Amino acid sequence: MDRPPHPNPLPEGRGGTTVGAYAWYIAVLMALSHLVSFLDRFVMGLAAVPIKTELGLSDTQIGLLAGLGFVILYSVVAVPLGQLADVVNRKRMIAVGIFFWSVATAACAFADSFGSLFLARLSVGLGEASLVPAAMSLIAAYFTRDKLGRAVSLFTMGAGLGKSAAYIAGAAILAWSIPRGGLTVPGLGHFVPWQVLFLAASLPGFVLVVLMLTTVREPVRTRTGKRPGAGPALAYLRANLRVYLTFGIAAISVIMEVQTIAAWAPSFFAREHNMTAAEAGYLVGSAALLASIFGALSGGFLTDWMQSRGLIGAPSITMAVSLVATAVSGLVLYTTPSLAIAVPAYAIVQFMTSAGSPAGLAGIQMMTPPEYRGLISSIFLCGVTLIAVGLGPTFIGVLTDHVFTGPRGLGTALLAANLVFAVIGIVAALSCRRGFQALRVA
Image (cartoon, rainbow, N blue to C red; front, side):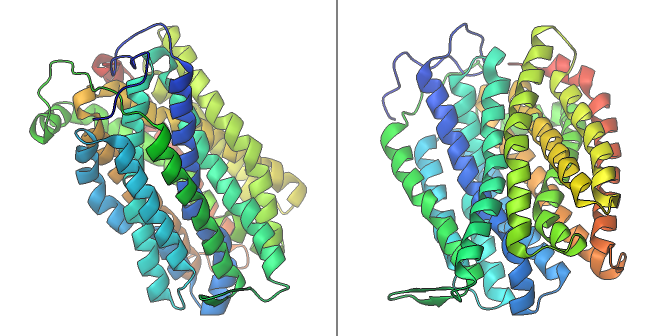
């Protein structure tokens, strides 16, 4: 095991009074890794417009590429990788995962059919499954509980920035490559504009691999006296299943809101406000950029502030507030014919969903003993990913192909999903507050 940093990181899941600059460096690097993972994940949202035309795909197939195609292997390996994160060197685990998903993202550029693109997206999901359990375990090891919400919000902020980077940088690449008919790479051949997107998106990951291996020092694991292993972890989860389940439903509802708008926002603005793919990418990425940053940070500060004042179930309250505001702003976004109104409404949706996201991840760390965090976080992540990421975008595609088939069908489908997810999540978040407070271990 690598030599720990000096001063030694605070015991996992324990209190403390100081958090050093190196701990914040770790949080920033984990956030950058999260950013790159979401850039590689959501470049599909922008590429969907030209891919649909050039490969002749249906909305359901686009939804599968954005959702279920990404999560199938992600969900299969998430739990064993989470268990692995409890015992192996976490920085190396993350580095291997980044390298694998970066190669898979580059492979998307060589796809020439739905099948080959679907296979490449499966591989992206397989690589990205390693990140969150290991990264959350590292963050929880370095931070005291009074700063954990902010550290996790920094991590989730990386996701919002990754989406914005995918849209803004992707739009710039499309604007550059479309007039030129794509890009010819010596030794590799010619790539059409949407394939150039995937090539470019794969590059930052290789830089991160080097940083991860050369600058991260694995902290010494501390124990609370609980017996480690899958058996005890699953027994703990079963004993507290009601709290975990209701908290998980609330978190899934927040992420369903995040994933559906992220996967379909460029297509929504392109179709319903008569924009090109590049124009929609610039707009969506720019409007979401600051909203995602300040939303994630605000959610972390709100959770920490409520905890410091002894409010029961602070992460649950944060998620409930986020969902209420998302439902209201989404109602405006999906019904207004005015672009001048739709853009700020979209920014508010991004702000509020970004504010709710850190609470789910932070709450799971607070509920779970350090010995079980990798495995239980991965189970949580598996459920969230399979339902929210896998079914959310695909569900919208099915609705627009078979239910809401009119000229404003995509907006109607997004509106219906927005309201249903919000109601379910609010009820779940409020119902688990006291159970969460009784279970909290960090």
